[in-house]
Image (cartoon, rainbow, N blue to C red; front, side, top):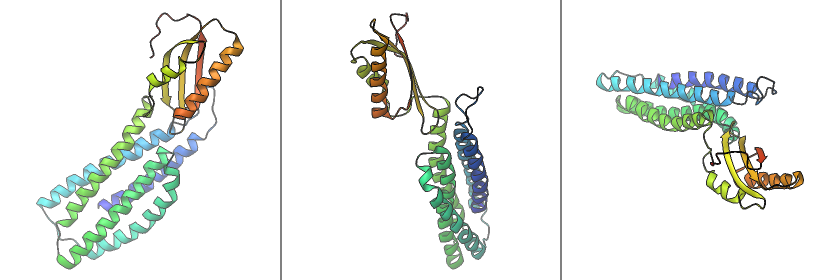
Length: 254
């Protein structure tokens, strides 16, 4: 049951992933000025959440089987697991490269990888059932596999929700940014900072930069220095900087 449900969810996951990829590549419009890039983040949440729901269902079923064990046909279990293992491994290998920089593909990749791992465990369990009649190994394997999937999918859901909630990307220190920006000649203060990830690859940064009474050419040079430093240190690739001279009454960092 666990192997079949995971394989079914794989098919759904790949369809959702494909639709999200297509949507994310649609051009920007006057309504969606960022495009539909976050469709991939929503797809990642859907795929990971599906795995979490299935895992809880399987744990419940496994616990019931421990209290009320059933006689299991080991040969059928082995056949299904072997048939499921081959396409899962092929699919995981095809998605591995794309999963490194794309959370949407990573969620689909983990679907297939977890199923490949599940199939191996089920094959081992089937062998024990066929030769030793150890029927309790089936629910135990189901619980262990489900717990493993829960831990891994939680990380994907957490990362996806952080992006949707526009949280500060991990590893970026705003106080460090404040320190180097305010060391630039002509800069008095940086405030009203906003930092967020649009998707896996696009990090956006915006801020007010208070400066001395300078010329436009000098402001452009300051802007260039800030943009280059942000990209070098944190791979921030979209910046919006508002230059001003003693305009804001509140000049807190955020």
